Amino acid sequence: MDSLLKRNLLRQIVARSSAQGVRVIIDGKRYTNFSSNDYLGLSHHPDVIASVKAALETYGFGSGASRLLAGGTDLHDALEAEIADFKGTENARVFNSGYTTNVGIIPAITREGDVIFSDELNHASIIDGCRLSRAKTIVYKHCDISMLEELVRNHRGRRNIIATDSIFSMDGDIAPLEDIHQVCLKHEIFLYLDDAHGTGVLGNGKGARDHFNLPSEPWVIQMGTFSKALGSYGAFVAGSNEIIQWISQTARSLIFSTALPPCVIAGSRAALELLRKGAPLIQRLWSNRQLLGDGLTRLGYDIKKSASPIIPIMTGTIKDTLTHAAELFSQGIYVPAIRPPTVNAPRLRLTVTAEHDSDDLALLISALGSLRE
Ligand SMILES: *Cc1c(COP(=O)(O)O)cnc(C)c1O
Image (cartoon, rainbow, N blue to C red; front, side, top):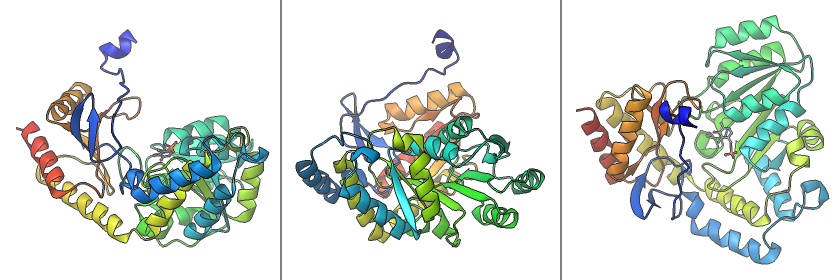
């Protein structure tokens, strides 16, 4: 602990005493929040809250057992049917979180002798899923398609898999999915797509596959979460009947863990319904993203290859990054500093949402401008 403290790497757990949103209260003080993944503000939408309350009255709170032991409800089944319809796949299964989806499914769909090709910036839950699998993991350079293709060519196997985030959670860039799709097609291997940040954000909310206009294929396995743009909790996998059946029989994080509470499922269903009608919200998210990106570029900030509501600002050393975050915090703006081991290069990580207004964006841009003086 002392050594973490000395190296400026001791992390803090921050507690909020208000709903998640643009205006949050931390230690009794109001902050304008640029750290939330609740991109559309659905976590506190009245329709979502009403659905949660109604389900709580009917079904009670806890689910009492895993899905295999009747811990699930007709709400769980309905949400799965709605997700399959929304994603245009044969079937879908709800998992307890994005983390448990990746650590459960990756070992379930791979065996000893298989190879997983994994982008070096993939989310920690994919990395941990690969560690739990008996397959060999080969990490390729971030979004480097020629390296990826060469690796795939040199390691043949019918059950091999490319695993990638759609939007990378710390850099905010988007994976070149058309190219990755082509590599899978050509070499007849599987694609495991983590669409945690793409769900509700890309492709009119439907996710990365729609954004790139890629066909629904039986060899594509898509996961997404309810925990980000859907403002709820939990996750899903969508794919062919065969894959979903196999995962349901073998993914240990599904079988050996208690099902999500029915009221959480009801909240996700209401959020999904709002997302289906949510074109104006999604447009506002992207126009805010455009405004903020332009403002930061005008100030001369390096935002790497961000092409999403996640915007990293590269601020030099760990110490500089912490100083910047502290300065913004003192001005009532919450922007977290992200440090190793989460990332190699320290940065401020901004997220912009549909709920920010032009004053919020102007406040942030002006504060970041004065940091450069
Ligand atoms: C957040 C995230 C997860 C984990 O999802 P939770 O629902 O928070 O457990 C998985 N993958 C990526 C890319 C993420 O950003």
